[in-house]
Image (cartoon, rainbow, N blue to C red; front, side, top):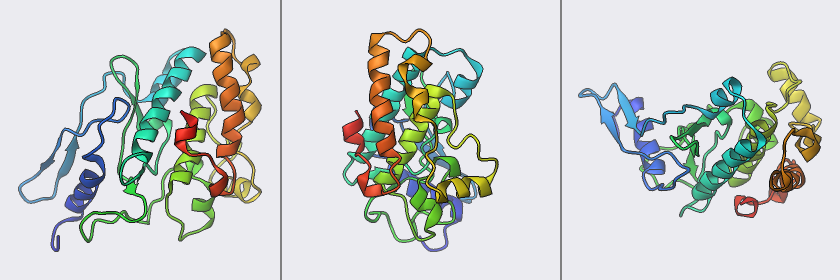
Length: 240
């Protein structure tokens, strides 16, 4: 790989992580494009007509049943990554990295920070950069507090809980933190990313019995995903 441009190395790493993933809730990789002099490298994937989930939620009235449907797809997509052999960390899960297909199914995308767990079986020189760890509001505490800490399945579960909470309630993680300093202070003081009581069925107008049951499940499980001890967080398989 010596002498290849950074763009080509990034593309080669993403290809290695992404190429084997086949699941309805994971964006499909169709191929790639390299310019003749290797200064342009692009991955090719299907166009999703309904765009990104975060933008869709911000611009459209969305009922609780549909929001719960989105969380089901997000969970299934992340389970595909975590159950892959070897397991894959997404490392930047958030509503902005979820697309909606023609049938409004949630599809995970953006594998720019994704990596294999326990060491990547990629070629030398294709390791994920440690300069960028993800999106601060969705990152787990250990990633904030330890410069040497790398992404894990447990940090993905924290991000999953933040993403689900955002999708269901419309509230971003740590909504009262105005800037990085306040965000770091909230994490140092072990504050949860959101008010878990916002997930109580009584907070949602028009929630039927099935939706109420799902909301109670999230109300009980999300605090476990926000445990500051990574080893105490449930696996994604227990969240399906």
